Length: 345
Image (tube, rainbow, N blue to C red; front, side, top):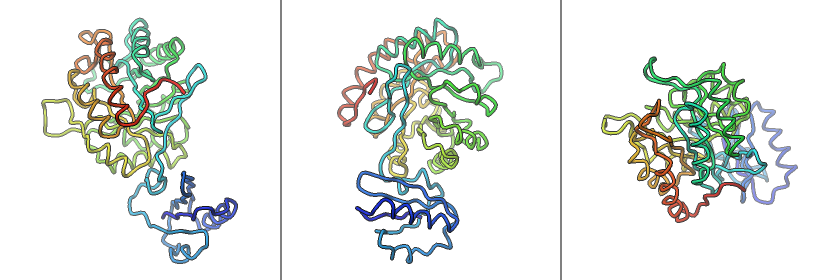
């Protein structure tokens, strides 16, 4: 249930009103937007009379929400939300809020020279975040599974050297203690419905980059976000990374329509992974342009210093030169959409 509060209503009266609602056994979520305050009621609202609420002098209107996701719902939070990430040198980056963020780096951290070199390169080209896999989910048990803890240590060294915040994937709940210095925890497509993990991430407070599952619907992605938000963590970035269809030419099929759909249904920032979507490096630029035009808040893509010899996903990785050219091309598209591409605020 959504309660829209009249403009100019005294803050203290609104808070007392909210407290009276909580006494009825529901949770009240405050959303104070630019033009209006909205109270979102979560829980069993069957016993709450909408007509009685509408009669309150503070209330403009009451709407019952049909969707199963509440906190992630734009009706609960009409204004766009965004995620803040502090940089090692004391600045702040934003994902959303009119800023376009680019996250770049290798699929897997392979060695010190590789990750430090790529980190310096993507930073110079304009990326705001460094991605890299320390723990890698692979279809084959015989494929490279990542360097594990050593990979995390190398990522943190790259962060210290370049000042780029780190994005890396968590595979298992037992790994959470290792991610204390990681800036954004990525939940991969295979873990999108690992509800035990999502519940715990809801209590960790760190920004979560939540990737859409290979066969997940938009509603299922938003319900996964709801699991995290229900635990109190609202710092979530949704990621469209391609879904599995009948088409075999590309690795997956990028669902461009998911971007405006997610932005209509939810206030959470939305980014796109063109690398996993196509699985082909030569498609990354075109899909990136499409993502910008469709209203995405950012991109996450794979960059490798030597894609031909990459231990994972070399075919979909850009080399540093191609990434530099892509960033130069994207700047004008981002500006046309009225967003800003900048490193630090």
